[in-house]
Amino acid sequence: MDILITHGGLARTRSMHVRPAQLWLILSALVVAMLLLSGTVYHFVFLKAVRDGWPVVSQIVGPVVGRDAVQRERYTRENLDAMAQKVGELQAKLLKLEAVGERVSGLAGLKPEELRALDDAGKASTSGPASELSVAKGAGGGPFVPAAGPSGAQLDQLVELLDTQADRSGDVFVLVESRLLERRLEMLMVPSIAPVDVPVGSGFGFRIDPFNRRAALHTGLDFAAPTGTPIRAAAGGRVLEADRDGAYGLSLQIDHGNGLITRYGHTSQILVQPGDVVRRGQEVALVGSTGRSTGPHLHFEVLLGGVPQDPAKFLARGESLDAAARTSAEVTPATRLRKSR
Image 1 (spheres, rainbow, N blue to C red):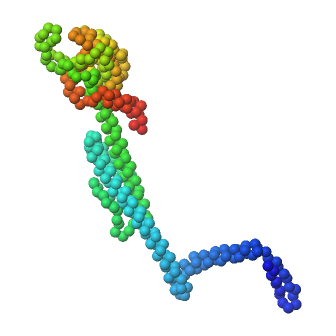
Image 2: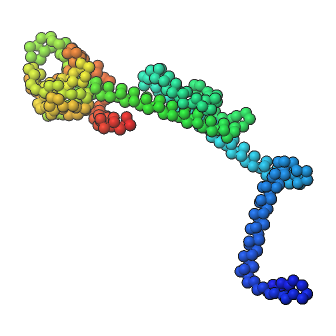
Image 3: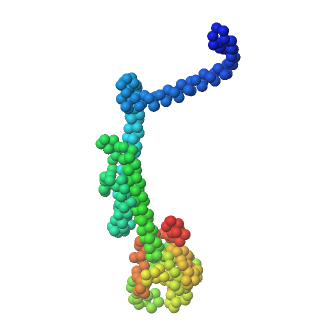
């Protein structure tokens, strides 16, 4: 394309040759410049004219700008309402979770003052603007539907408050887990599983002595089983004695703490040594017929403060040997340390 440029009748005419690519580049630059100019005029002239109420310009561009503002306001309000709905649903779930936490904490034996300490800490942490919002107490729920529509600042305060409530519920459940684990560990230290998985032959109480045929007190339970049958610890503890003990023959005693001791008599072999720490369900000896015995069996005793107790009262709350072995394997010192973290 050739462009002729002249300044007058006597002036020399100039010729400029423009290639198609250059022409498109010039046109593109002009379009971009016009767009930038239009945006600048719109934002710095038209919007200012509407805000300041210029006599003529504001009346011309006012309806257009007003429609844009209304659309933006509606879009913003719809987003805020959707966020408020989600926040309300989250609040309802947290309230239900808090109610469940209070019930579970009562079952776990948490004292009311411990929960009050958590509440006081939560109140102290929400002493800022979020604490000015009204929060429902006790069980409740339902969506959050504000009367006049929430603002962005109100939603921020609600989210901050819900975050505090979630932290508080998490602390309650951690404390409940700790209490339940303590109880489980206490149960592991109480004789609650039969040392041999066979029926009881002779129970606790008075009976006819098999040797002299006279009435005598039988201070434990007899479990008749073939020689070499494994004997498992009825609870976790420390081996107190493992040696021959008169009428008990080759016997074993395990100290479970708090004056509670279990005795395993007439064994053919002891698999642990004094001072060893054993877990519930661990094999500690083998059935035999040593000492004052008429045949292979285990004589099992439970002593509290040195006084024989009826072992059946302890074993009645127990479980099978296989389940006990799995439980004792799960709750080891390493497991307790990992759970405490």
